Image 1 (cartoon, rainbow, N blue to C red):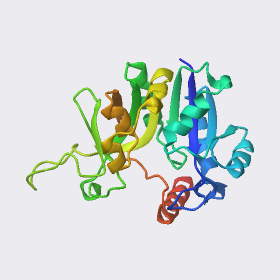
Image 2 (cartoon, rainbow, N blue to C red):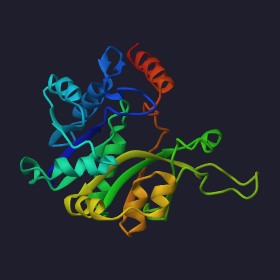
Image 3 (cartoon, rainbow, N blue to C red):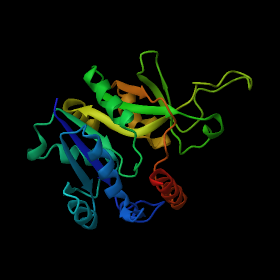
Image 4 (tube, rainbow, N blue to C red):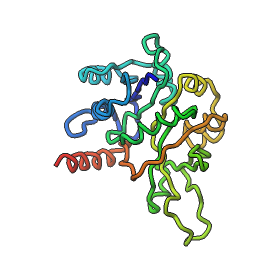
Length: 247
């Protein structure tokens, strides 16, 4: 299968102004994500989808293509679908949506998401172990799967709920990572579907696919994931972690 990697990078973030262009260790955040994904050599083509000409200019300096998309999209998947539908990208069988604020994306997450699609799921994604003291954080989206690894529900709430405080918690909580692999047909179907009640109240786009009956296969990572960059504090933590890695 031929894989097209698309990195949505929206400039208009409300929690971190001009997020894709914020510097991480001296380079724009979007550039760090591009470098990370390219180094894994798991996609046949990589492109950034953005609503900003400034982001296009920054990305093209790296040698990676960037596409200016409509500013009317409400989700990253809609932006990805616009790019995937362009004539020059129509011969790719699988499209993978890689968040533009994940400079520490784990190779296992990308490999696993692609593997779930290869195994027959309409959508593939990944989740990492979540520590008990973090499960109440609504920014950390939790996922519960069936015994085959297919998603049953995603939520900002604590799922599953432990009725008794002394019930075991090891291996119980999993944090969803913002990566999606789709077949071309499943991506087209996803964006054709109307929003669902749970999607609208949770503000989680994957619930649209799930509530309409699409299968989402979840690869469980072996270790906790490093957080993405959504806020100024996240950026400070990412900077500290980056320098710790290169020492």
